[in-house]
Image 1 (cartoon, rainbow, N blue to C red):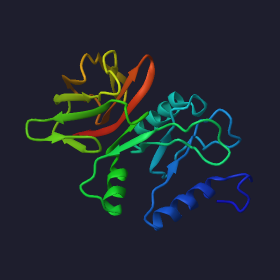
Image 2: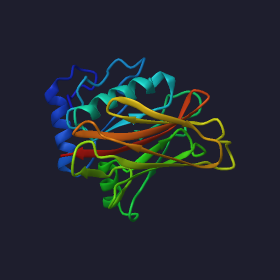
Image 3: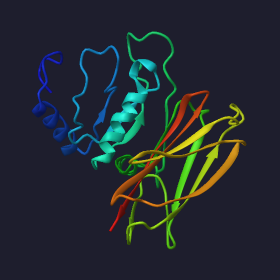
Image 4: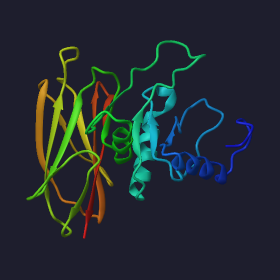
Length: 233
């Protein structure tokens, strides 16, 4: 980064910063790329960053962030979304309780970084937000968030199961779950119980596709599940 953090940034500044972090084994997450009030925003390209912050505050324009993320996914950039509050000295009010639920094999730092790189996580607005589990099933295997699925041929249908789980602190009835692929929203359903399962099927029509899901209530985003990636040959 330039010596003056308020100075102008060029493409090489971003590339050098990202390369330096990767050389040290770290991950680069782009903070609030679409904020309303910040004097500096990240450029239109994500370069080789690993993830993007999803902040639920309206000031951080979460809908625009998700739209930009989707655009990156469509051109083959496998960026994960990571929840953040951006709460630090000088902030007003209470911070958002953004919660990241990461699937890991054990509690080591290396395993956590590996899981984040693969995008094995979902972002919750708060700890009481609903949790989403998406399972993609072929005739031979089952796949989950962050997995990369390779299908033997085009137009091969796969079976889908979405499991939505709530807790006693928040009633899930009336929650709407939406499923997306590279073209946009492809399915939606209403949750009618605290432990709810939806089943369906999906036929990829592009050689490189993906599936991710959200849960919302009263038109307010509660949860976002990162993608399962699909390749067809």
